[in-house]
Length: 149
Image 1 (tube, rainbow, N blue to C red):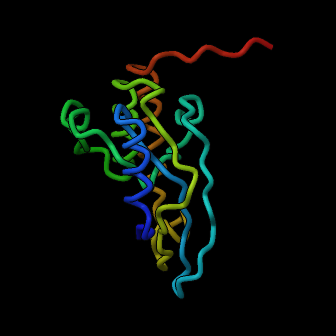
Image 2 (cartoon, rainbow, N blue to C red):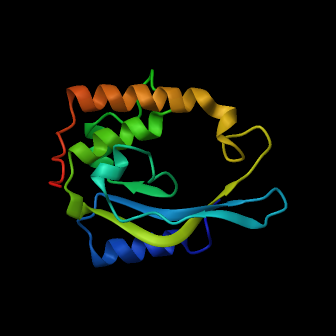
């Protein structure tokens, strides 16, 4: 569920920086009675963190021309289709064209039996994501240099 100001916040950011290709926001969950819970305060864009988890999730805006170029969602990635799409999307844009709105603009309703309530209900998505990340990192993603210790 989008917040009342979700579109406004995205348009405001796009008006100040029309070259953005990808915008994502923080999110939270709603109990079945509508009580907010489980806020997810996300970091600004971090390719290293993104290689370990799909943290951009909800709410995300994507430049249409890039979505067309990468052919959007792909069949065969059910369960991790969002992660697959964003991994391919960020390969063809620049970090400075990715922005984070540090405000919960999406409320994910917790429903019994869904992944919004517990990850145990959608374990196939985690398995799919692990296979996806391993295959992407082995074959197409650039190697991230390790920090010197």
